[in-house]
Structures are given as C-alpha cells and as structure tokens.
Length: 446
Image (cartoon, rainbow, N blue to C red; front, side, top):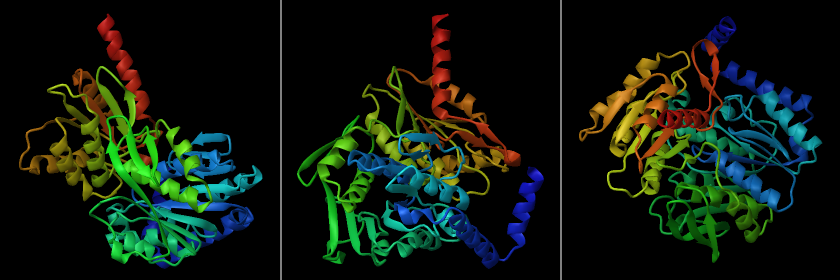
C-alpha cells in the first residue's frame, strides 16, 4: 500500500499540471458514462464555501423531505438515499468520480427527485463536479483554506466559482460575505441573496440588483441554547448554537424557496433539528459541558470560541478548556501559529494534540501551533502538549470543574485519524469523551 501511494505521489509530482487535469476530466467523463449520466434524472443542489456546507446540506435535506420530496444527500458526515443513510468513512467530503456518479445512479433507482451535494475546491480541481447537471448552486462563505494547494486565495475562490459557472439555473449567495459580489457576478436564471439585517460587512445595498430575491433574518437573538430571529415576520426558534448557524438556516431556506417550498414548511423542518453531528455538538451537559466541533480553520475557531463563551455556565471562575491540533500532510501550515494565537486569546487552558498528522512529524505540527501561543503578547494561558489525542481528551476532562466548558475541535464526528504510511485509525472524539467520562465516574465511585 505504501509503495503504491509513493508511486502515485511521484507520478503527480513529475506529471505536468495539464496532464493531471485531463486525467481527472476523463475519469469524470467515464464515471458519468458508465452510470449513464444519472444527474439528468435529478434536481442536483451543490453547496460550496469554506464553512457550513455539511450543515446546510442536512438542513436542506430536512426541508425538502418535510415538503414531501424524495431526497438523497452526500456530505462529509454521511451518505443518504431516502430512508437509508450511512456514515461517510471515506475521509473525503466530495468523493471520487465513480463513487459520486454511482451514488447519483442509486438515488435515481430509489426514486429520488433531489440530490444535495457538498462541493469542495479540491473536488472542483479534480473535475468531480463535471458531468453533473446542477440545478442550484449555494455559496455559504469564504475564508483562507487550502492556500498552499491552490497557490493563492484568489485561486481558491476561483475554484469555488466554477460551480456557479456551470450552474446557470439558480444561485444563492451569502450577502454578508466579502466575496458576495464575485459569486453574484455569475449569470443565472434566478438569484437569491441571504443576510442578517444591519451587518456591516458584505455587499452594499446600492450594489444589489432588482432581480435578486433577498431572504433576511431580523431581530436576531443568540441565546445559550437556541437562536431566535424573524424571517418575513415569522418567528424562528432554532435549537442550535452559534450565530453562524443563522446563515446556514438562511442558506437552506433559499434552497427551499427555489424549489417552491413554503416558509412555514421550512420553519417546521428546521425547528425539528436538535443537533448537527460533530458541529457544536454538546456531548456532556454537566457538571461541566463538553462540546465537540469540526472547526479547523482560524475563522471557524474564532466563531466556535466566541459561541462557547456564550454558552458557558455563568459561575464565577468558570474556565474554557480547549483541546486542539492541526492537520498534517503539508495542509495549510500557515494557519497553525494563527490557531495558537486564537486559542491563547480565548481559552483559559490549552491542550495541544494530534489531529490528522498523516506523514508529517506530529511534534513539529504542535511546535508550529505553539509558536502562535508564545508569540501572543498577552500570553498568560496555561498550555500543555500531549501527542496522544485520547490522553489529551482525558487530561482536559480530568482538570475540568463544575461550570467549566471543554471544547474539542478539529475532527468533529470524523470516523478516522489519518497517520503515517496511509494508515487510518478508527476514531470518534464524541465516543472518546463518553468513554473517558464513564471512567472518571467509576474512579469517583471506587
């Protein structure tokens, strides 16, 4: 396996980019050909952006099902075809050409009318979006990620834009994102824009076109255990954490509206959602809270820490205990010290640990994050480096006291940890937390 992997990497290294691009293009074509271009028999909705894709896919799935449609969906969390669903264990948000085309063919065989897909920049670079007839393209937000792979933020944005380039029917764009104007610039038959009222960032009103249909959240209230806001004078109470989830709700409503679904049906479906797996998921409620989240970029880490500060029990002296790492394999090394700086700014206790080191030296990854901690000018936060992720989680739970919040980021509900030689170790942060909490309870009872 290792020899095959190394041979593949060498072939990539020494092959000219145009040859690699054509290789993936042909794979996409033959994948679609073998499975008889299944997307022609579906309404396919593609969701792209840096954050929130999996959540929007799940929310849109619930809305369309509530409206009575037969739905398939594919995200980093799961595969779903009508009532059948199974965990995505591929460690790929957007699977390879043949897998995705087979999924769409299976959805057609099952009588599905819709397929909702996460669309990634890596998938687009490898033409996995090709020969899929997208009915709707949704843009959630954009912040720096995969920059080393793409070469620049502009190239990263351009890759995301290719989904909008090939989808000429319906577009939905986050108007509060600074890149909204770019995505609105692609031609389509119908355009939706969504935003939170009175936000300072994003596109200005005078830049909006008359044909843009705007969905706006008003009277927003972010509470410890729910979100409250108005859309078209209808009150929404969403049982999720974080202001960022309002944007995810708005994205999903735009999808619903584009398919003729009434607002009240959207509301009914969304208010039934109690959690998103591995996304600000509360695993332990007390005596201290333990939250698991997928956050693995600087911006998402900021949003998660700000949200967690809001849901902490209000006891005086309550602490925020953070367990975090960063992926290896040469992925976005620039962000490692930045994540260290963010952690030291928000957290009271920090435990640095493995995330997905791949073939990179795990100690070197933690040292990169540590540079950000040591470089923060007001550094007073206590921190430790514990390579073994299970041991790091055990340490965090062991030092937590009543009223504290433990936040474990980076993997969410991912089922694997990727280590050297292409090996994958079965993993689930949530299950590790439950196991260690039970051990702590047993120790106290002895």
